[in-house]
Length: 102
View 1 (cartoon, rainbow, N blue to C red):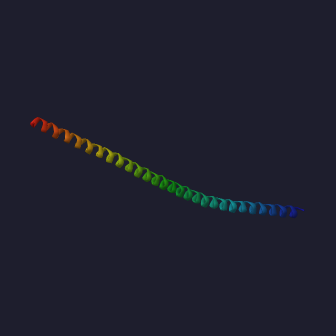
View 2: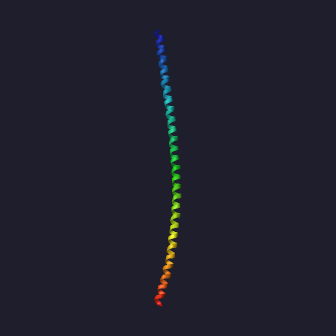
View 3: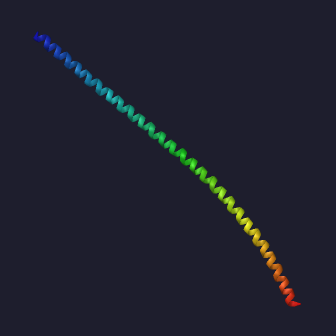
């Protein structure tokens, strides 16, 4: 009977040790899996951030190009208006000089 109790205790200890070892292995597997997954998530976040940054930069370029085209149009209109005004002033000046000479 004592031998039976000792054998039962040893078997229980062996089972407990196996449970602990299995738990340690499972814990290590889960840790590695979590580490790999966190690396994948980090890479995905970085990739998404880069894609978003590229999109924003592209939109900024388009917006900048549109602004430049708008500014060029305004400058052309102002230049044309100034040329017309200068020709009118020149004509007035010539007429004034001629009238002063006459």
